[in-house]
Length: 347
Image (cartoon, rainbow, N blue to C red; front, side):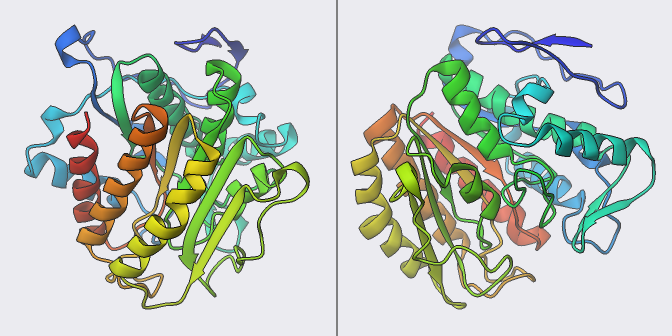
């Protein structure tokens, strides 16, 4: 199959393992522009991990149900998503690795690329669409169709390294989005804010020697994947463009706000990003079963608002947020609702 990505022209070959129905929506009128986009596709539910695995399809069901109950669903834009191409993926990942994931899915049945990560026959298609959701969101924001966007995707991405699946992740959605911004929209400086409770080792690896991408991570330490120490600041030309804040279990809303205000804000002022991407994990919530933080919905509201203020200060509000972790269904849904409400304030 041949696809042409909307926005900047790129013609690349890709093949989905299973034909997918695209979500078609009527063309948006001018009055509907400059809102908040919510990107989701049913294929994300077909990435099967089993009933006992924490990264399960019910995460997205809970989010969507909460947004509909709150009356927000109809107020959001819902752009049709194009899947990422192999060329999009290989801007970050080794071609042989991408092919390995495809072949593993073609073989049928569940497979385990590492001891906590599970794949199924539809995982490759879901992962192409997850990365594609980020690229579609980037296009919508860059063309002015949307002010900002939230991508409710799975599998998540920030642990995926160049040639390795890790921590429930196969392809690094946010890293692929950063490269796409640079290659297809001419953005020179991208900032990635990662507030997932686990360090985004894959995202850090992708840009560790790259001064054009500023990577910030605040995360519980020690905790999986045992990376992201404060002295990890980049290498070569990228030295100083990685900022890790490992914090102890039990850290609170106040602790996170202080770090965002006192450390991240001046760092972004020096970097002057032209676009901000968020790896939005909500597993630092006090109810999450996989970590030990003490954040509340109000804490995530504040982090979102501070991130939006920085986007306003530096890059004309251009921001795309991408779901990473969050494994207590009620807490996840409540935090995403709060997050999206703040995004909508600026849209």
